[in-house]
Length: 283
Image (tube, rainbow, N blue to C red; front, side, top):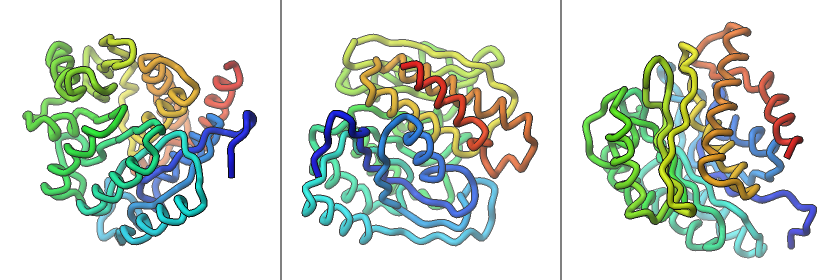
């Protein structure tokens, strides 16, 4: 099953799947498909709804499925251009994700350390999972923590609007001396949002600012990281990947505000994908 020059890039996506609510695999697959990448989904958990804003959701972890899927991929001799992990069903899945990273050492390794938001842990995220997530991020080429997750990884107090100098120091520490690219997303600044990062290839710090648009929606972090990865697979510099991701998230929110619905359902991705397709068609 070799890839040819006309083949799309191929991504293993180790994320959860919610039946209702636009987040995780529900948004990762269409976003990366529009960016001309084939998503090979490996669910880490199955949920009736996502955990943000819903009570009594059904949750089932899929550790054995993850393990057996890797065995089958290896038996088939499949090639992958990226291994992309996010929300995990339990702390033992850290070991399984590490197996995927070892199996495909030439792939881009993107870890989105999905653990919480707005200073709070997700309902299924345990302190032990958080501790082991630190180990997983150390094996990545790129990590995309939000402000809450960055604080958890560094054992720092959460603040919704830290100074840019503080964020750069956090980015420096998360890069482990410049060994990986990092962007901390979602920090409030002067009525907007700033995403502060470090590009380990070009050895440069950067800040990408965008409008807040007075709304927050579940799943925007997954959309951000997916656009970032799609741009990286195209060969774009890390700062340009972050800029493209931030622009698309803003477009998703703008379109969603024009089509009122429950916030917890996520952004109106179906009406925003045309914008992303047009932008990629220019490249």
